[in-house]
Image 1 (cartoon, each protein chain N blue to C red):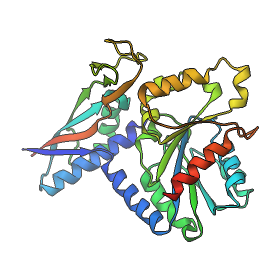
Image 2 (image 1 turned 60 degrees about the vertical axis):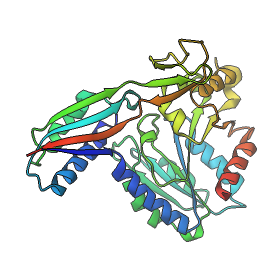
Image 3 (image 1 turned 60 degrees about the horizontal axis):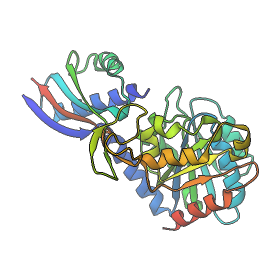
Length: 215
Length: 113
């Protein structure tokens, strides 16, 4: 006997994510899923965002890593609530891991919650976590051709942050070429070039985030 | 890279459906995968053998239907298959494409006893 199923393999994941989003909504928390390759500057960008946004918003961070607490220790030094998830080899965070993590955070006392996903441009794109918006950080040293190589990632995100722009003079990198590559597959996604070191572009990026979180 | 968790989800979904229909054994699973998922067929089969061991799906045939990555051109509306790294419309040369398929990842059906 044949049974028609026609169900997305990620349905179980997405159902859990929907429940988590409802939990966040009921606490008035806006959640951002930050994805990028290893070394793109996820933690550094988060630290720069924390310094800029902490006066105005109550912030929290969930750190996803294969192992170690290196990143969460950096965040904890800023004195904001942080929770570390170690995937123990897993290449991405999934909704089930997050559904256990959200209740561990002081949700009633948070406005913005950032999730730093595992460094990976492939698997992370397939898993909803209960977030409201998803972004990818593409750093300058990774090259301006990344959108062609990881089309799935660059089409599922709500915004793209180009990090380490202070390195452009020293690299064979064209922001114009990167933008053209993104536009080829995603004509409308906003792109924010930033340098966490010089703070250039941070204001425009944080303004976008603030507007989105208010919706 | 994420074949292990995809295969686990696939197996969970199939076992759930089999239980719903009071089936004792799953003999075949038909899976549809878009090219853009970057899923490696051999890895899925490898993990399936391990994960399905001692479940009603043990020994089931896993059929994977690969769907091409298709795009349409926003300038001239022509549709074509996306070749790797070639994000240019073969008809008019524009670099403004819309992905119309290739992201599929679902369990189409199962055959049970």
